[in-house]
Amino acid sequence: MNSRTLKIIIPASIGQVESSLDLPIELLSNPEYKIRGLALVAHPNPLMGGTKDNKVVQTLARALNQLGYISLRPNFRGIGETTGTHDDGLGESSDIYEVVEWMRNPDSWASHEELRGYPWLKTVRDLPLVLAGFSFGTYVSSLVCKRLLDEGQDVERLVLVGSATSKWTLPKVPANTILIHGERDETILLKSVFDWAAPQELAVSVIPEADHFFHRKLHCIRDIVIRSWEGQPRVR
Image (cartoon, rainbow, N blue to C red; front, side):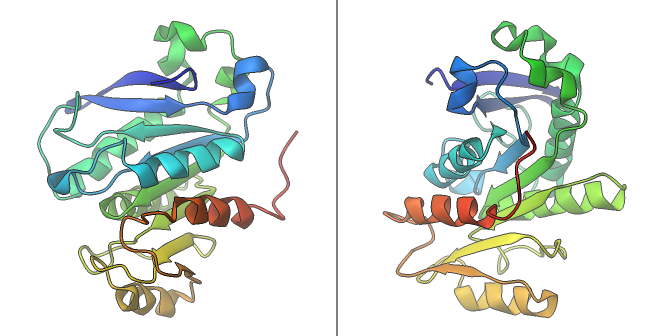
């Protein structure tokens, strides 16, 4: 943990969800820094060792920090201090939905002394929401996104890295979704992602030579995410 990252324990129906909250570095020196929105980043399959501290997940969180978002990285059921047992994505999506509700409630943050006094806390109900995920996390994030949109709630953007299209049935996603995949992904073949994206006319950003875990290619993920926000002016 560093000064930009805070440990957050979020109450949930399963008991609690352990999370890491990543703050934009500018906020540390300027409490009045204008926060662009809230972001939640979901990690890969916990049965295969996935946690909130996965390098791809941290890269997504920090890229969104750089764009001005507060990023939250929750641990799924049974990982770290998160209670419950693995539920193949369905229970996890319900948990993450509850976490989103928690994030959007200004009273949720009151127990965290480190965050008291920040002006952005008064506006959390109105801040835009970004959902992101890696591998198994793409399935969970896409389910949460669909549920929120079906309920008439807003999701500013969905970011999916290593989309688990051959492992789980991902729902249809918004047209502005960012899809990033490795050319040499041996776990989820690129063709599977193309087959899923084509009927939706979604573009896929392919990182040459990248495997499923994007070894030595994390900077490419960061650059794609940041470039994808170009042309979308910040509210100041």
